[in-house]
Structure formats: C-alpha cells, structure tokens
Image 1: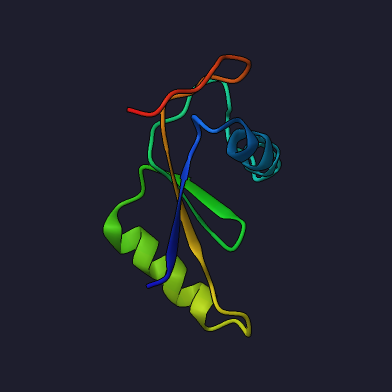
Image 2 (image 1 turned 90 degrees about the vertical axis):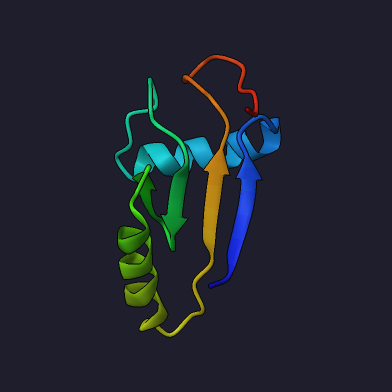
Length: 83
C-alpha cells in the first residue's frame, strides 16, 4: 500500500489539509489522530480494516490511490505540534 506521512506541525501541510478536511465534513475544533485520507475521503483514528476497505475501494477506481497519514496534535486556530 502506498502511503504518504504528513505532519500537521508543518504549517504548509496544515494549510493544505485543513481546508480539505473541513470540506470533507470533519470537525476541526477537535479531532483524534491519526487522520487518514484515501482519495479525499478522511477518517480520524480508523481501524486497519477500515483503511484497507477504503484503499480497496479506491484501488478499483482508475487512478492509483495514495493514503496520506496525518499525525500531530491540533485544534483549529492553534499552533500544531508533532508528538
């Protein structure tokens, strides 16, 4: 499974992901980590089975999926830091 690790402590990562997470319906005032995204579908603290199911569904689509795994500790409007 291809994946990409992103740290929300990095301001450019935060600026890229927060709008996409909000658009996907996530509550950005508080969320559990890690956050996993499979082709625009976000989940907070998903089980391994859930990630594999999402990845399998995405893999059946024409483009090759990438699974960004986001880690850190953040609340919207506050500075983020890596554990």
